[in-house]
Amino acid sequence: MHPVKTILGLAALVLAAGTFGYLAAGWGSGKAVSLGLPPSPAASTQATQASGTLPSGRALEVWFARGGRLVEALRTHAPTRQVATAAVKALLSGPSRSERSAGIRSEIPGGTRLLGIAIANGVARVDFSSEYESGASSRSLQLRLAQVVYTLTQFPTVSAVRFSVDGTAVNDRAVGRSAYKGLAAEAAPLAGTWKLLPEAPIAAQVDRTSVWTGRELLVLGRHAFAAYEPRRNAWHRLAPPPAGRYRLAWTGKQAVAWGRRAYAYDGSWRPLPKAPVTEPAIVAWTGRELIGWSRSGGAAYRPATNKWRTLPPAPFLGSSAWTGRDLIVAAGSRAAAFAPGSGWRELPALPEPRDGASAVWDGSELLVVGGNGAPTAGFAYDPKADTWRRLALMDSGRARAAAVWTGTRLLIWGGETGKPGAFGTPPHGLAYDPRADRWSPLPQAPLRGRLEPVAAWTGRSLIVWGGDPGFADGAIFTPQHP
Image (tube, rainbow, N blue to C red; front, side, top):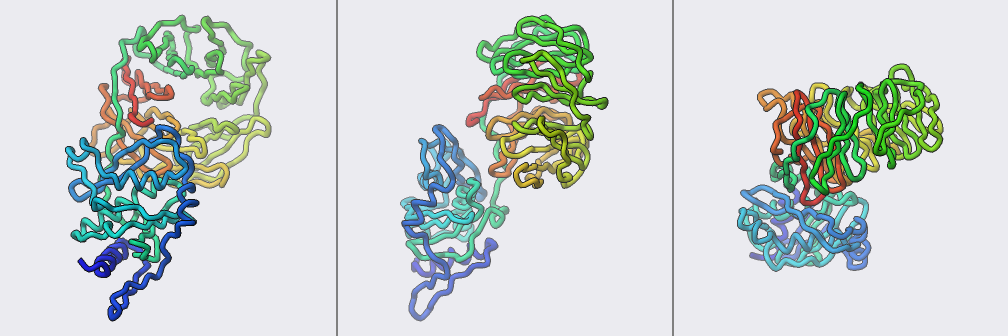
């Protein structure tokens, strides 16, 4: 195939994908005239550092094709500052043997070489060798373009891609994922394995609460208390505090159960001084104090002094998460933040009202998902920008589900979907990747679906246990790439 015609065909497909750039050709001269600039070697060195250093063992996304649709695969790579280059080279290496046996292929021709890559202002300019334009159907050419776009836009510094072949620009405007939505397959389940927990030494618990200590999952109900240790895959029964309904927190040295009275546990229970507030609906450990609120007011307990102090009342109660500096609470359309040194302040209103949602801090944003009515739309609040953004829609919303943050993903398990014609309480969950703004299903758990299970992230695995109505079993899920 004539190289000019191939470049023009590739450019036309980029344009058809939704870009506004174009490539003019001098038909009499037989040369393509680029309206954009190819990546320069000098820019390439700087650009490959733009996405940050890749830690050891960190997974990279590479996108291949199966059945005429895009499909994601994961790769690990040695630590490098050239993460964009690492991702594209992994893409050019093609599918693994096992992936090929599963029908996964690459539409990028063998022998294609990466000549340069530069990232600036959210755009990756990538230059391939002439093998990249080898003849194929329009569908195949679309897929090979989409493979590169999806692979590079996994990075927060890249939102779109411009292509060049042997230094000749194919398009002068960048193209992003939205141009290839028709090629995107449904998200594959998050790779990982489930394992049933051994039988717990306690029955199903009403008003259960739990906390992760760094070594054990502590589960406290109205009348029972137990601990599960993943390292030994074993439960042991513990003496409970006086019967009641509690909120449980971990201070780093001891567990504190706060209900009508408050008790501390470090091998045995001891009563704490009488708290100014009883039966809190919200509790959080700040690193120095345990803070909490009920409808009647707020209080803080400092273990170092074994004393309580009164806090200003919360403007409202709702879903909450501690950010490391503030406690953020969201309910209905309202949101507010409490800073231990300065009190409460109102935050911008949520884009849509939410009650009963799961609220999780991901290190930079507060993620608010699910809630009453199982809405599929979720939101993220950025304290630095003081703004909310909408998340990608969930396949099915969740109400009364458990939610944990892994360090890279939000995992949700259990709850009810509220989806007409769907299984009301499915035995599977969802994973959200904020960096890619993408939801993926979790593999089905060896458990029945349930409401409000307790859950914890151990640093490498998700533990879920109990739930309504009357469940006393659990399982542990270990992702292949946490």
